[in-house]
Length: 149
Ligand code: SF4
Image (cartoon, rainbow, N blue to C red; front, side, top):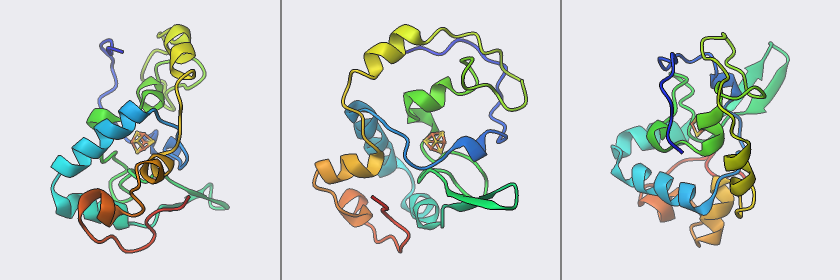
């Protein structure tokens, strides 16, 4: 899916929507793994090693996406972020939290095809590919919290 021009300039107001458990396709998994292996190891290590526990309105805690940098609220794998992340702020049911982007994409057809694919979380795809920790995946040691399946 190509992206139409957007007024989004990469602010971080939507970071709190980056929650754990996002379902992705196998192709997306493969592309993310490729990018993780190309990124500076120190940076990958720093983000994956962070606690992903976050607070919502001072009361509720939740687990953020594995790839959300909890220090900067930026996405570690932004260039290959999954479809659902690309649609955020661009479709009516996932509106931009600061109304900066028009929700003008009709993604019904692409979502119909996409949801017919096998979809799993990144961690589940790792297991399906016989990668049981980030050392298997990247050849680096990552302290817990690492994989929560
Ligand atoms: S992959 Fe990136 S954009 Fe998508 S939920 Fe995770 S941190 Fe957010």
